[in-house]
Amino acid sequence: MAFLLRQVARSGLQRNLILMRHASASTSANPELSVQVSESCLKRLREICVDGSFLRVTVEGGGCSGFQYKFDLDKQLNEDDRQFGEAEAKVVIDTVSLEYCSGATVDYHSELIRAGFRMVANPLAEQGCSCGSSFSIKL
Image: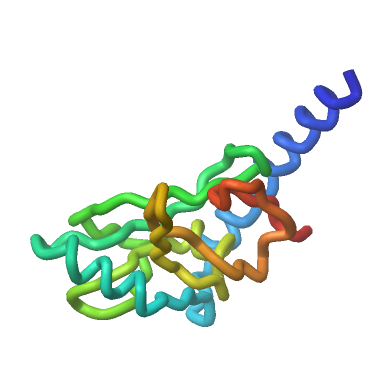
């Protein structure tokens, strides 16, 4: 029972935190927020983004630890998007998601059993799950 109460309280706290950060982001976009893009990520994006597409990174509520990274290929830029990387190998993150991963590095990692994009060394993440796609933020 205590576990369920903690989960409900944590999800409510995270929802309120997201709303507060979204409100502050909409009033003033912070130009200092940025991410780094690794050379392996740039190399892979040059291979797969030949039609003008780019890698979109978003941070959503959910996952094992409270927040999760989502990676998609996209062709449509939005008004609040920030671009990183280079012209042929772009990483695009909206300003709200950028507040949760600023200072991190977008990487492409290839192993024997899987390969994919990942976010590494996020200074705002307190802990994450073993799969590396979800994290909790430092309060």
